Length: 311
Length: 255
Image 1: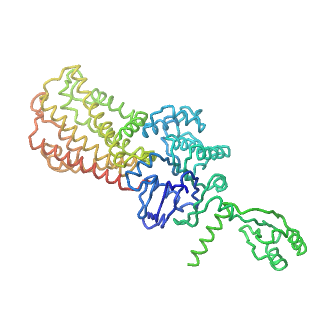
Image 2: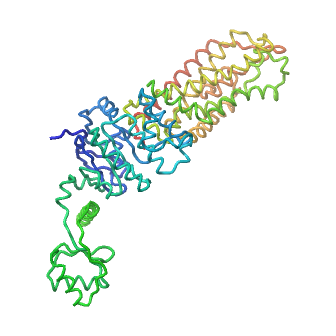
Image 3: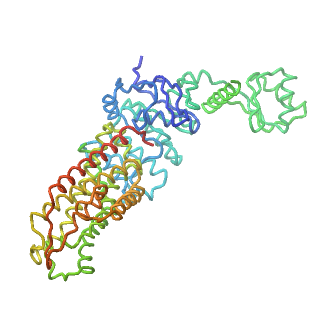
């Protein structure tokens, strides 16, 4: 069984009257890539800030690399790197100068590490250009270079692919996979691009309104993934009635755009088409899909929202 | 701590505002000397310059405001200070490193710039006998100590506000308001006026203000009470300001 590199137990954080974290508990296994998934304001960044020592929790406990006191945390943080919110940088300095400042601050003796990292993230051509003139993607690359400078064992990345072009997104994904595979770097990552997380993460933590609503591994998600037919017609309401009454299909979900998802009778495509045709409904879309991370997330958030409303 | 000091220095050396401020500190006293003084440059000795140029301290006050605020709040404003905290440095180390850099960049550089024109004038026209050397050294030392107090006050504000701009503005307003209180009290900036102890600036202006007892001759002697009270009030204020800043830095969440 893998060791936990980070363990958070019953963590609570309150900003004024607003509860940012409410009794949050989870652990991060060594060598895993954990995706923190949740809407804006869910508490993802607060968790990362607590791990980085920027914010103090009101209650609960944190353990990093087995340490659970201030001195131990400081030592653990020398083995970690953080990129939280937008990458911080000195606007009047160049990428190289920003990395050099960071190298000095961290006491990294190898000066060549700065150029190495600039090459690695593709910023070696930026030259003396001040960071204030950088695009969001370039700033993001600089943030990643900063995070990699100390060869960390644990990386905590908040929206690292935000603002990157498609090519950049793939590069970052491959780079993180490589670091995880070759150097056994443990990664905690948050992103709104769930399709990207699904290509990267080994574990997922779903968080909403400061509470963990689900945790599962990539294998568990795959097992949970169910297939469905996505149907869009010229009259979806009528189509829903036909499918229920004629074919006795009960598990039908109406989406926000009016189109339907059928989770039953997946082997009855001929019957479905025929029933719709005979009922005078013309299908415009009829495709077989699988529930992905995005669907799973939406279901979870929706489910929790309904439960809260009931309460 | 040493790495943080080096890192902050690295940034400050590349900050245009800091470099312009230092350039202004070196050149402005010379301009003032030529433009607005009762004495000609040829008759201005080192000691006469020291005895008659008390107003130049206002320029240095602005410089202290800029340099101390930059040292303590620039990295907080763009959040690059967060990297230091996330890299495993103790919060207290991050704070005290900045205070050390702040004192070096504001007090030491300002003190050197304050004394440079005295040096130029001494080289050009000699030290002269307008003020006794022992009195001059004592007053300069006390001015230096009070400058530490002013810098500590600004660094406290900068640490709490986390913005150099706001810190410069608020620091300036607060220093001026308290100094005006001294000014409106009886015998403003006169030696021994108790109100001068409330404001670092008022105290400096008191220490840089001399009674002319003859032609180009000034009485710069200080009573023991003034010396002791100035030292004690400065040390107390420095300690209080730095401790308040430290508590605010170590205990508060970073955004």
